[in-house]
Length: 287
Figure 1 (cartoon, rainbow, N blue to C red):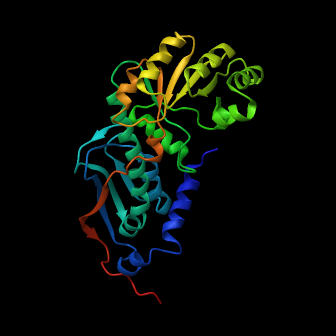
Figure 2: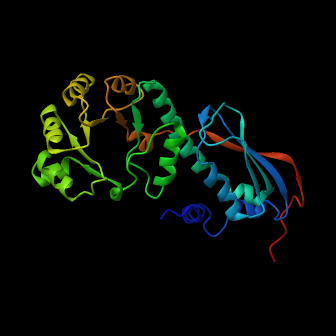
Figure 3: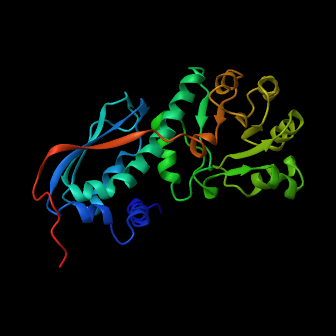
């Protein structure tokens, strides 16, 4: 089961180690102040929950206000978060909190760009399992915030017969039949194919969904015609912002894209302290 606090504690420990030496040496413990976070570019927000929680784990009295909801598009230089409390906490948590928000907002932003490029034809954009270890739930939530849809979360969530399964099991038809025999009747069986001949095998064997791997737009159109609505079709491979629109217009039901979670660029977010401050400005000497 996913435990956000455990992940965040590990992230804080990785960055802080035995303590934030710079902050402890320069900032008095009781100095209080405020800060804002903004982006240097427009973006779609995701990750507000881990961002806020990181500060709270260091100091339960810190106040973190998110000025937008996850999934909202925010312009450059617009305040997104406002924090108030001990300056030591604000400075020590800054980098870890920003890392989560930058990474997740990058995924949401890339997803939104692709969804918009696909148009309104009814084709859905899906993510994959190509995620950062232990970040999967957060990254898949970011895809949702960007307007995409989640594929299976893990291996226990569905049957997706890939090329290596097919090679080991003896072929497309054999793999689908075995899966069909053992799968609960409520579970859909999906199989990956590399050509039209394998697509026909998959349909005849009883597949519910066929993943068309690295098909060109022309091949995808042919596959749609051959399938004739008997199975759902998912296009995968070679998907980018430049190609996703043309792929979606071929008539497939889904486009899956691993780049959403393994190649999205982090958003440039920054935190700035905001005077005035109150309390002692100099740290007390350690006795």
